[in-house]
Length: 118
Image 1 (cartoon, rainbow, N blue to C red):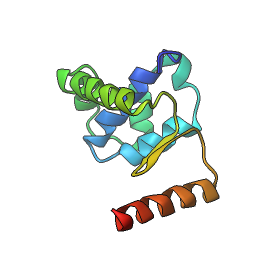
Image 2 (image 1 turned 135 degrees about the vertical axis):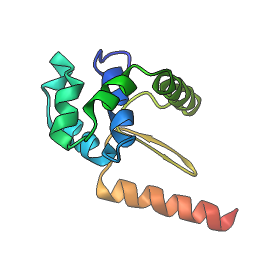
Image 3 (image 1 turned 180 degrees about the horizontal axis):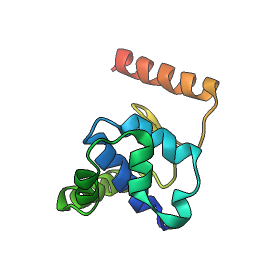
Image 4 (image 1 turned 90 degrees about the horizontal axis):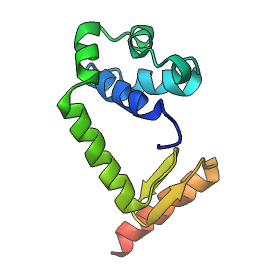
């Protein structure tokens, strides 16, 4: 997200946490705290979510593999015209922005219908 200078770091932190099976915890941490948005202290966030190997996490943040993953993810997002979070991609379309329970249920129903009909 070009309008959020911490977005790339947060994405890197989530990818690197995932490499240590802590994606869900990092995702929750990033959505429920704000301090990282100003100081971008990814190691603190990793410790908070229980990432076990902080040196490997720190190395991962700057790795070429993560840079390539972000480039690929951005290319996919551009192709789908996804430019905000949250966004939901389903078989018959894309929903940008938060969705209510009914919105998400309708998206899932449309996708199931699409698969059944096609």
